[in-house]
Image (cartoon, rainbow, N blue to C red):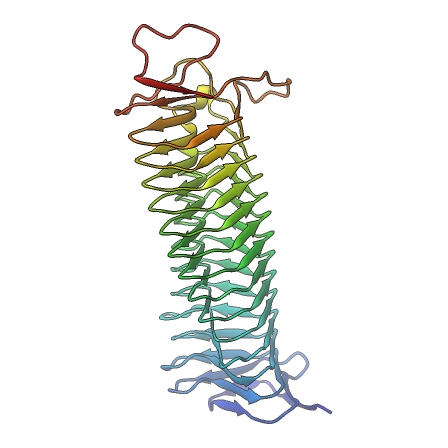
Length: 388
């Protein structure tokens, strides 16, 4: 049977160690309870098989995180938490619930850090932290659902060091670095998230990172909406990528990946850019542009020794006649991919598209062109035209 302690309004200064089983500490109805510490130990340390803290404001101005889960499970609910060196640290295979809290304004640290831990992190606001909003590392495996993560100077969510987890229905926006970083063997399942208006790229999978990235809405980030590099090898399936400042997906520096059945539209450079030994599988995607005549952009750009398999995609809105700077599929400076059964549609109107052959151009300069299969070549054609 649980023991419940209701705390009256006031500001308390001494750190709290919870070692009692089935203890519930909560703010008395309508009261504001503040635990404000300036110490080298956490403001609250959980070392109990189960305990709950509900409705408190927890501030740590000293050289420790505000809350430490060091043993057992426990619940932190409806709390407002800030700490100079970090808000919450979960370690030692702890498995707590964090629900309905705000974790914010860590001036030198993170919002939530998991190290060899599990957790359910549900419906929290994580904002304005110096380091990552949520950092999942060293084999941790949390369930992260329904959180709003914004305004941090670092990344929104980081999954590294062979950690995994489920990242579902979160909104990640306005962070200073890449919104979601999957690195060093990180392997999460990422579904139904909104990742937008970041100051860096949207999602980066690098250094042997993996993961399944499915049915997310990723848009309007300052960098590329997805970057895959350094043997990163995710499955990217049925997402919407749109309206970004860079490319929809950029695969480079030996990045790989299986990219299938995505909607990719309205980018400043290319829907998909494969370069610098990038080697993905790109199949059954729809890539389109709202720029008249393509606006000098490319649907798929393969350059700088980029490789891969590019098959069965539909590319809409680029003309098949010669144009300046871009085209539906453009290869140049050593780009070489297997191309098969791609459909090029000159307009993105609702009319039934006519079947068209895929033509790509290889050039060694910036003047890459794509020409129509329905008329003769110009007098000064590009050096090599690859026809499927």
